[in-house]
Length: 238
Image (cartoon, rainbow, N blue to C red):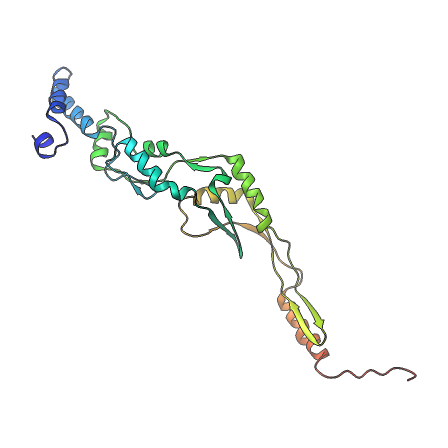
């Protein structure tokens, strides 16, 4: 009565089928209960299932795939924002060979039919948050990361002091960076669909030979005093 009239989880025909199956197998009560649970659970996902933030609990497998494709799909094509110190770049998932396998994601979250009582109970009462299953073309991803050397790899720049007439011009130093490509590949995979901001990629740092502090000392001790007062030039024999 609770399954049919109150909960409306089973039709009368389904309930009678469960009783009939129980009567012709060992342990009729347990078998009937398990089969009734199987009919209720069907191929639904666990009640509390979420995939990459998308609630799919209680949905049939095909419904969950459709919902995941519709709601998660737009996020899977958004460019990834990447940074190395002050330098920025974007990487499109398609160019990096990263995509989502929606069917596998649903199956991993508990979709599909089963007579296992543990699975049936989990469908009716359990479930948890899981990540979408990714399909990654490693060769394509490594190639895309290799192309990031253009915006991210820079040699160190030394600080310098020059004169423009009597005005002192100072060029600031800048550390050199070399992208750590293997680590970048790992971080991009981990950050896909999870990062809430730019993904900071690791790089080897090369310090400049002449720092801003050293240039400041030259300006203070030599460059400024040199133009602080008129210079008298005496020409021999004049």
